[in-house]
Length: 303
Image (tube, rainbow, N blue to C red; front, top):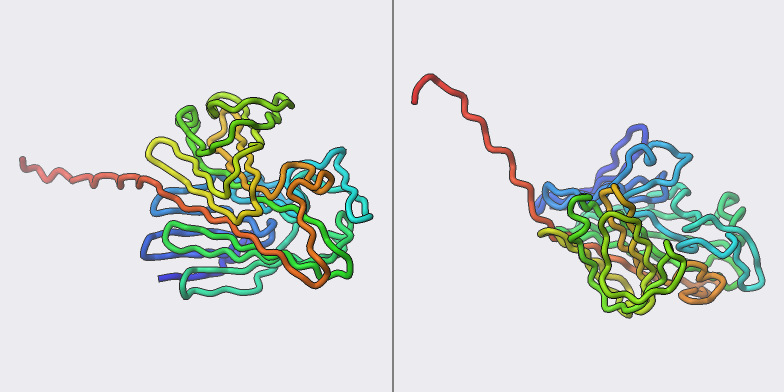
């Protein structure tokens, strides 16, 4: 049985549930339409730094941030495209803007649509008018995001898009974690150089790899007996892997293009006035379930 519920508090959240599989998703519309939690059975799929979520002045570290209209940093923090110039923060502005709940449903899945429309706050960075609508759907152990970018202005609008999921991987298990890829080359953003990719070692150090020839809209992250599969529409052809030492997460991020895509054109999408462009990303969790604690039997004085 599917259900969608609004939960009020210091930060309003939407809860999507599938009671048959005991799956649960929490979304914070005010914090960039962020998925904060994704649970499969009794296992949490995502890492979340609660302090950053509670502080509006900070970028949230954790969950699944939306990266729009440009994933990654721009060269010099600036773009020049379609005859317009401006500045953008790393990963764009969507993750720091409040989204509006525009629809919910609970038929073939628990779903909610959140929308961000252009405003004075977005025009300070981005001179195009737009609507970004993201529908989140939970069914069984799968969470799907369907994003639709609509150009509501009168001039062609460029954009790039990505997501930044923080998968919860214990630090003690990161050294054995594996990312599925056929990529042989990557931009190492720690060393600031292109490298040959043999084995991706995720334990004990910062890893920030931008895969150059992944050539697939699918990947997976596995560790111990757990596995997260990530699938996306063909536009999301660039993948980024990031983790920090002593932090229990690994990010596996599909982007339409590498950082600075607005300037380089690699992965830049142009939407004509009045038209839309749609993309999707789906996360499937195959997680071993924690065993419940054994009940404690009270001693009644008899053997």
